[in-house]
Length: 461
Image (cartoon, rainbow, N blue to C red):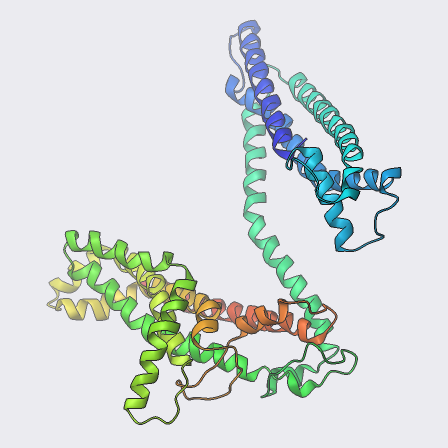
């Protein structure tokens, strides 16, 4: 039985508990001396329903994780699986074919060895599906009965329901935090393994990047793992060139839309500007590789540059800057629009012009939101991959010339983690070290943004 069916069964049992508890609450209300309950009948119903559904959801999640393994183990222990390969891709393919036919996802098998496993799979599926249904009904009965018997005229069902809902909201708010902790823990573990093979000094301060996935992992050449060219490429393309484009254009567009544009123009221009944020990055990459990069190369030749590259940091940075304009513009627009009208009116009443009001009142007052938008844009820029791959190449180059090809940290992470490289090889583990450094840089940017926001909020509150 699929997890979806178990989930629907859990919701159905919860609905049955809700109806039964609501009817019980109305009965208690009629039988009470004063005709009143401590909580409304709806809260009694939700109390029982939550006590049925929440344990069932936990069981469905657990059963969905362990049932496939139990089914596969039961099939492998059957006599029909005696001739299967001991391990490997072929063995898993045979099992997947048999499972697909047994579940009805495929009409027939292509591998003769899988044909004999169809019936063992059906038997195992039937057996463990029965167990899943029985355990689901048992949990629903026990939890529902326990909650149902607690319903009394003086039972504070509302307080209990609110506590359960509060716990659910708390768990939901912790998902992002726990996910971040999990990502950081995995990065730290793999990074420590990498630094056990390559010195952190060579990695953080080396100027040559050229890992060889085919080299001997027991004696890596530390001089090939210098990440300075990658850090510089990320900074140069994402935080310098792209920001030179995105910050002025985004901020000026926000000022125009909030202070000068009439409502009709704003209703058309703002959605059109925000459409840029929804364009797939691969489209920007094609645009940069096929249009912007050749145009920059031809312009450089016309200006007398010698042998300019068809893939350049300038092309990737310009297109990346256009891509993140909406991040800066939207945050700045909302922040400027949120400045109290009294501050605008007071500045104009003191004789300031519209220009002076924008420069000396509105922008400083909206600076926390503007800084947040800029930090979001920088984080988005340094994490971009497709545009850099298609317009700036994958060559690690330490240069200040924007017309030369460069690469970034994220591009090399993808390059190191794709393919058939072993996860015990320093070339593969270097991707985790790069990700850890990128994570720490982004975290540092967020701390800087919080400091700036706090400082100016104190000044204007």
